[in-house]
Length: 342
Image 1 (tube, rainbow, N blue to C red):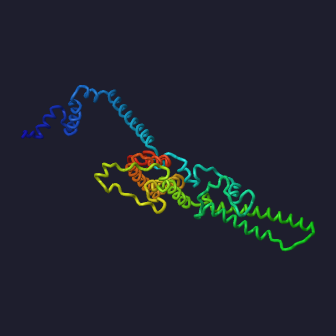
Image 2: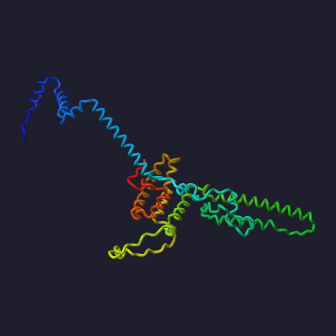
Image 3: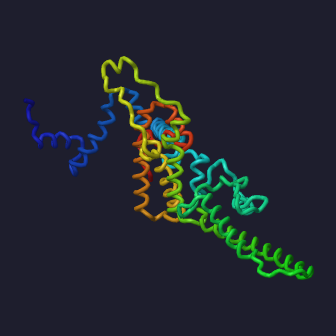
């Protein structure tokens, strides 16, 4: 055990150096000055004392911090936006609910979808852009709307073309023919106006965001459901014989689907992408102070991240994974690493 040094003897030794008034302050100054003198090497003592060396150290630290910020920005740019990813035609079509391959149609094109060029009421061939709006509001289809329009034209034409009187006077016949033509023209104009009004009523452009989201969910099911993708994408390779010998139950045959695929990972990821886009657009424009929807957006983004990680691990970069990533424009930032939305 080392010998104890009495306090008064140490103070007496310090008093010999000229610190009689305030011994405690002098002790602190002595230890502070000796911390520099007790440096291990001459270079370290010089760095502690040289102001130029201190300025160089501060400059190196500032350069390292700025470089770390640049690298973080480059890394985040390489990963991509964790919420939106890369804009693609399919994702951008969520706003208008029109397929990306279609082009906007005019009013006359919509009218020609309900009537043919000859004007016969029994036939209703589609116009050149009849496939533009396959999805309508109120669960209606373009075919049902065209049939209703033709039926209404038939009913009005049957009443207008009735003629209960017969005469041999040519002037009366001529006047009646002119009147009939005028009535037909007026009836066609009224029918065109009614068709335009009906198309505007059932158009999703005039619907609410909830109506568009419902149709977008149906589009995701039609685009990524396995009842559709199994016809286009190549199937998975068969199970190896070595695995079958070790685990005979691995060769289980799947039951055929009874309806459309709505529960696979691809469909759920596409539906979550549609919901995330709708919610992100709302928060950017009108819902900036809405904290509840910000939390809901974070929940949806993390749900999609978990499904993407599962699908990536399961498919291992297969055709289903590539088809999903390329169509939805998802980047590594949507499933890789930790996602924090500020």
